[in-house]
Length: 231
Image (cartoon, rainbow, N blue to C red):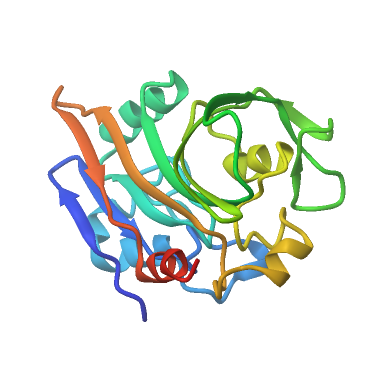
């Protein structure tokens, strides 16, 4: 794999990786030739090749990040750890924290976005306006710093829907900077030089299989840091 995949933590059960932006989690029918996080796992941790519900596609993978979102991913190294982590996610016992830069200055400075999300028919886009397979979706947010025309926020999804943070922030008219799918013309006209959305999974916290409380963190990548400095 051309890009580095830094290992943040590893023990007999868990592997925490800092996924760079631009890396798919696993292969899809439309993206058969792209390198993926799953490829890296199979090459560098072959002992994980039989872990998971569909290990040839998603070895040890229990949660995901969008291709152009950077940040922490936790991988299970054995089947017991995978089942344990799956239950934690299902029960809402995993706290994930993201950093996002959004267009405009959000008011109030702290809040909860509670809007169900569905799949917009005939597209890959998600929507709060009905759609297919509508599911509950809740995101907490807090403004960390206001800029001229932008806000740096901390977002904590309490559910795990595809594109959740991006859809929810767009729904309150503060889409993520550089988000080509949900920010429309703004992403083309004022992306601060970014080639992807300004969204980074900065930390994840949970109690591990051995009852140790883990908090894995990864710093903001250089492209996002540079974009902030350019404001």
